[in-house]
Amino acid sequence: MKYALSTKLLAEFLGTFLLVFGGCGSAVLAAAFPHLGIGFAGVALAFGLTVLTGVYAFGPISGGHFNPAVSLGLAVAGRFSWGELLPYVVTQVIAAIVASGVLYLIASGGPDFSLAGGFASNGYGPHSPGGYDLLAAAVTEGVLTGFFLLVILGSTESRAPAGFAGIAIGLALTLIHLISIPVTNTSVNPARSTGPALIAGGIALQQLWLFWVAPLAGAAIAGFLHKTALAEK
Image (cartoon, rainbow, N blue to C red; front, side, top):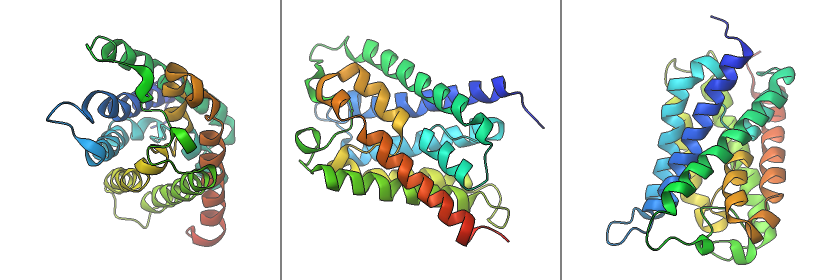
């Protein structure tokens, strides 16, 4: 069944909202909750679960990108229309901003709320959870986004087992977060980075450029690699 572009964009909006609200919400509201904090592992699982559930709920309609880097990588790989790329990216960014705004309304109602913690924004140097520098952050984001795209492209090919792509993609994003939360607080998604950065402001907004450049570059390289060397012939 073919869906109108407007329907696809609605699905992308809802899926991206779920990812940002669920993933960043776990970091802001639950990661360090007194005595019951879920920690890095819980946040990583939350991001993976949002993508896993979002892919099954909205993927049949829009493809379940929820991420400008994914949309770009799929376009480079020849698996997505270049003509729909800009509308998808704009929708994803708007959804991330709206989700971050809703999260702020909830979080700011708590007695100890402060934006000093970064509001789940991404960063390097003094804004990295582990103090990792710009080069480390750039390599981490580029490499992990690239592998994320390769998992997406491989698990959605016709030769892959049917019906399991969402599980592979969700687990891949969980693994990515387990690796990189200490380095950059994990982006691999420019929209996910943009929403919290606009709320947090300051250094988060100043460093936002990296979390567009590195994921987009990693995704584009992975898309090209898959198209030229790994795709079904």
